[in-house]
Amino acid sequence: IAMVGKYMDLTEAYKSLSESLIHAGIHTRTKVKVHYVDSDIIEKGLAILEKVKKEYGVPVLTDVHEYSPLAEVASVVDILQTPAFLCRQTSFILDVCSQGLPVNIKKGQFLAPWDMKHVAEKAKSTGNNQIMLCDRGTSFGYNTLISDMRGLPIMRAMDCPVVFDATHSVQQPGGMGGSSGGQREFVPVLARAAVSVGVAGVFMETHPDPEQALSDGANSWPLDKMEALLETLLAIDTTVKKHDFIEDSLIG
Image (tube, rainbow, N blue to C red; front, side):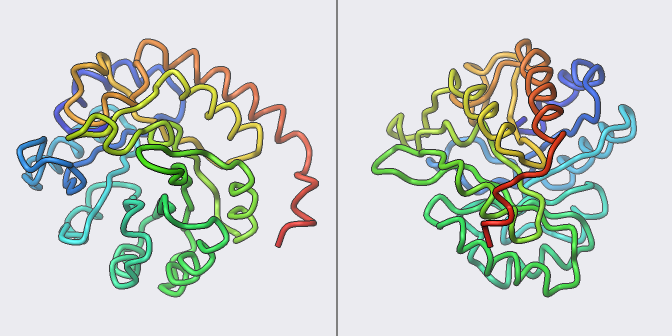
C-alpha cells in the first residue's frame, strides 16, 4: 500500500489475512515530478496509521527518509523501512536503527548483495539486532531491473532475516517518462521464486484499483488477487522450510 489515503478502505479486506502488515508511505521523497503526490503532512499521516493500528489490531510499517521526524514516527509504527537509494547514507542508517524498532533496509538497485554486509554491520553497531535486509531488484540497463535470486542466500548469510520486495522488483524506473512503469503480471512469478529460495518475508504493495493508485500503481498487485497469491506463497514456504538450506554451509 503506497499512500495513507487508501488505508481505511483496505483494512477490512486485510483483516481476513493472517499476520497482516500495513505499509504506509507517509513521508515520501521519491517522486519523479514535483507536482506528483506529496505526503509531507506528517501529523495527519501518523494519525491515520495510529487509527488503523488500534481499530484493526494490525502492525504497521512505514518508510522514513532523511528529514522524517524519526522519534515521532517510531512512537506510532511497529517497523521502520529505509529507501533503497539511501542504504549507503551512514548517518541516516544509524539514526533510523537507533530508534529501537525493527528496521527493514532495502538494498540499493546499484549495490551488489555482498556489499550489504557493510550496511548490516553499520546498522547492528547501534545495538539494534532487529535488522532485516530487503532485495528490490538490481539495475540492468535503462529503465530495467532484474532479480538475481542468488543474492537472497548471500544476504541471509549476514545473519539478518531477508525480505523480498516483489512489487518494486517489477518496477521500470522512469519507464513512463515522468514516472516509473511496471510489469505487475510478473509479481507472482518473482514472489514464488523468492519464497522457494527461502526468505523470511515478502513485501508487496497492493491497491483495489492499481490504475488509479496515486503512487506505484504500475507495479502494485490488485487487492482482489492478493489472498490467492498469499495462499500459494504460504504453501511454498511451508514446503521449503521443512528442511535446512543445504547451500548455507557453502555460502559465507
